Image (tube, rainbow, N blue to C red; front, side, top):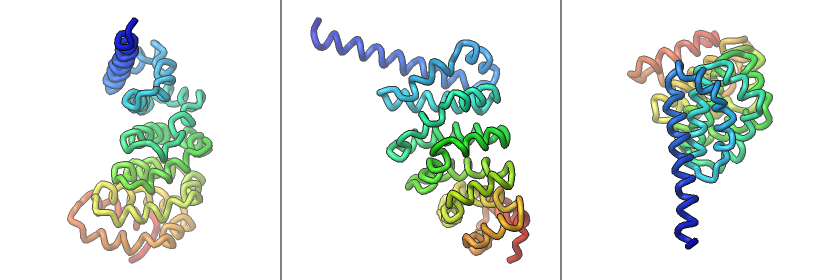
Length: 241
C-alpha cells in the first residue's frame, strides 16, 4: 500500500469519530433522548474521546457530556463515581477557550444539582484550582463560566461557600465587577451574593475583599439585570452603603 492509501485509513477513522461525537452532542440537547443514550452506554463511549488526539473531538465530547449531565442526575452521579473530573481538568491551563468553556459547563451542571454533588466536585483533586485558573483567564467567556460554576457551588451551603472563599476566589470575583462585559459583571455579582447570603462572617469576607464600592458603582449602569444582582448581593450580605 502507498503512503497515501495508508493515511486515508486514518483520515476516514477521524472523520467517523468526528461525525459520531457531533451527533451525540446534538442528540444530547433534548432531555427526552438521555434515557436512550444512557442505555446505549454513551458515557463509556465518550470517555476515551475526552483524550482523543483530535482537539475538535475532545471538545465535542465534553459538550455532549455537559448536556447529558445538565439534564439527568443519574448521568451526573455516574460522571462523579467514574472519576471523569480528573480527565476533564488535566492541563486545563494549556487548553483553548472553547475547551475551558466546555469543561466549565460540565462542572457547573454537576454542581447545580445538589450540595452533595457540589461537595464531591470541591473535594475532587484540582477541581477548585482549575476553576480559579479559568477565573484568571484572559478570555471573558472563560471567566464568566468559572464565576458561574463557583456561584453554583457557593449557593448550596455555608461550608461550600467558605470553600470558595478559602481558595482565594473573592478578589478574582471582585475583579469581574470591574470588567466591561455586562454578563461577566452580572455573574460575578451573583456569585458574590451566593457567598454572602449564608452568614455575617461570609458577608464580611465579601466586604473585606473590596466588593462594595464596585457593587455600588455598578448601580449606575442602565442594565436592569445587573442592578438586580447587585441589590440582591447587598441585601443578602446586610451591607449598607
